[in-house]
Each structure stands twice: as structure tokens, then as C-alpha cells.
Amino acid sequence: MRLAIVSPRLRTRRRGKRPGAARQSNGSNGVRVLSPAGSRLKSGVRVLGLIEHINWDPVIFKVGGPLALRWYGLMYVVAFTIGYYVLRWLQRIGHLRVSVEDCTNIIIVGVIGTFLGGRLGHLFFYQFDEIVLNSMNKPLWDRVVQSLEVWKGGMSMHGGIIGVVSAELIYARIKKLQFWNIGDACVHVVPIGVTTVRFGNFINGELYGRTINDSAGKPITDAAQLPWYAMKFPTDVDSPGYRGLLHAMQDAWFKEHPNADRLPPDWGVLPVKPEIWQQYEPLFYGRYPSQLVQMFFEGFILLLLIWWLRRYCKRPGVLGSLFLIGYAVFRIPAELIRQPDIAVDPAKGAELGATAAFLNAIGMTMGQFLSVLIIIWGAVQLVIFLRPRQSITGGEYPDYSRKLPPFGKAKLPKDAPIGRPGDSAPPDPA
Image (cartoon, rainbow, N blue to C red; front, side, top):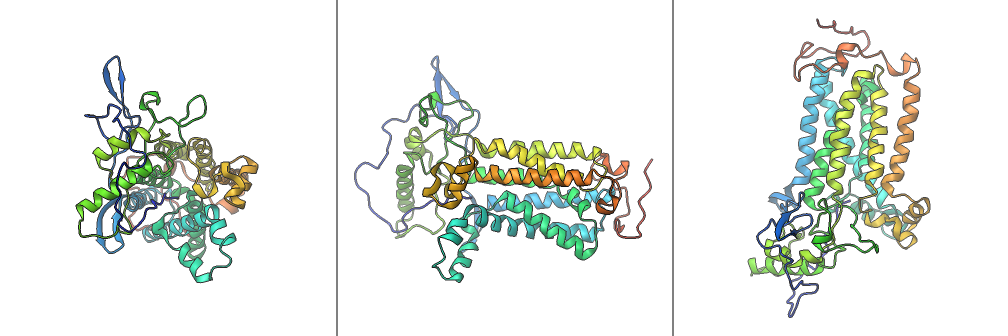
């Protein structure tokens, strides 16, 4: 879920000291602006952190009105573009048993399933109380409009998985293709999407990790006490310095736009001005960089694991099942350092609603609970597909389609229709 930066839209004049302003810069002069723990002094030597927020503007450029190209959206474009070429390569070597036209359609269907499933999943899993339980007195149309306001954030990875599976299943049934074969091909692509989208979350400064606390359980703001992997996010609305930074950034914007009387609807604190961040950084909590952790394990490592396991998965459906289990296994521990979504934080329990109270009762975050269900789903499939029931899974993959030849080397005619009833398998290349 994207963090909305809530701020007054009307211009206001503030006098006196801004709330939460820091008196000292904590030695951050002359160093990179957004470091994980700021700068530290060890034996008189200035040391820089190894990870830092890149402080980019989430908007690359504006098209007009509310339309804009954002880094977050571009990451989806990059993922699906790479995914298309991966599927085409799998089709050329005979692992994906479809035609070139179907290969293109699989990506298009996957895009639709990702966004519908991701959005509906977020509404159902993370905003169920707000949209359904607490909005029964609102007109149905108002609730529908609220559900479609994707620019306010809200995509669920678990919902996206369900959406892609459902969309590809419908397409496979209509085109009479082997669904489990399509699923095995798609799981080569999904970790790429996880990697790029988590990087988009990182640019936006959203879905950050939990606070790093001292021995007394209090969040640490002092850079000298934070570990090297800690990060401070200007979008951290819970930090004591956020309100002061927000006001300072608003004032700076109005100075640059003297004729404006209100902030733009899509205004945000990023990119933060270095001199303003230098003033308020000492009042921000150090947090775990959960976006980068998830990008590495749920994306990059899972991608390598899937490509390595494919050579051992002879039956269609087995690799897809292992992907479900693998993603959930990586996601569960990542939730331990990720800040829970604000609407379903188990720590706040019943005060947030029925969903948070349920999660508090079972001692899990929503991501962990959904991941447990994903593990059960993948395990049941795996048991079924490991049985000798070829009528369910289709024919086994030949050895040549499970190996990893040079990328892009064509093994089949460009438009060879493969995998339909009556098609013969291509010869095993020498």
C-alpha cells in the first residue's frame, strides 16, 4: 500500500519556530544527503553509510493534468517488456508450448490479471474494513469510485498472483492450451516484476521497514547508534521530524511559486531539499530497508532459484508450485522487518477494525497470513503433480527444453504452433 502524504492544500503562513526543528545538523555537512544512518564519527574520521535513499522525484515527467509518468509505473513497463522476451525465448526452445501470437497474448493477459488482481486484492485484504464493513451507509457508486482510485496507491502482490493465475487459466481454457505449461513459463517472469516493482517502492519511499529500536524498545534517531544498514525515509510520517519537514518543504514550494495559493493535488515531499533534510534528519527514525531486502530475496534470489530448479522439473505444474512455495517462504520472514500496512497493523488490533483484530489474534501480519495460504496452495498442487497422472499435467518436458542454452538461440521455426492437440515435439538438437 502506498503511503499517502496528507497535507493541507491551502496556503498558510507560519511564524516562529517550526514544529520539531532540530538545532544541530548532527555533523551531516559535506556528506551525501540521504544516508541510512547519516554520517558517523569514528576516531575523528567521517564514515558514510553503505545504503542511502536515492531521493529521486517519483514523477519522471508530467503529461498533463493528473497524468504523469512515474518511476513506479515505469518499473511495471520494464518488467513486462523483459517478461515478453523471456517468454519468447522459452517458446523458441520448446519449453513454452504455444505459438508466437499466443506468447504475446499471454503477456497482455498477464498485465490485465496483475492490475485487476493486485488492486482487488489490496481492497479485499487491506481495505476490507474501510470499503465494505465501515462504508455500508455510503452509496454503492461512491464505494466503486473509491475502489478505482489507484493513484492513491494500493496493489497487493498476493492479489496479483491470484489475478495472473485466474487470467491465464481463462485464456488457456478459451484457446485450449496447456495451462500448467503456461504457468511454468510465467514463473520465470514474476520474480523480475517483483525486483523492479520493489525498486519502485524504494524510489517512492513507501513500504519501508520497521524502526530499529534500542534495548529499551524505543526507536533510534541518533545516527551514531544505528547499524550500517539502517535507513531514514523523508516519507516516514511516524517520525517526530516529519511534520516539521513537511511544513518546511511546503514553504519552500510556495517561495518558488509566489503566485500559487494552494499545493498541487499530487504534491509530495520527495525530492526533499538537501538543506531541509539536513535540518530535520536527526529527528527521523532509523528503519530497516525492507524494500531492498524483498527486492533481493523475493526477486533476484527467487529468480535464480526458479531458473536452476527448472532443469529438475519434468512435469508441467511442478515448477509453478515450487514458485508459490518459494515466494511465500521468502515473504514470511521479510514481514518481520517490514512496517505493517497502516490499516491492518496487528499491533493496534481492534482499534483499527475486524481485520486487524483477527491478525492480532493469530499473531501474524496480513502478508504472513496470505503467504501461509500460498504455501498450502503450492504444496497441494505439488502433491498432485508429482503423481503419475499425465492427463492432468500434460506430457513431460524433454531434456532439451529444460536445459539453459545460450539466451536467444532459436531452436524452432519462428511461428511454429507448439503444444496444441496433434502437434509433435521438436527433435532433440544435437
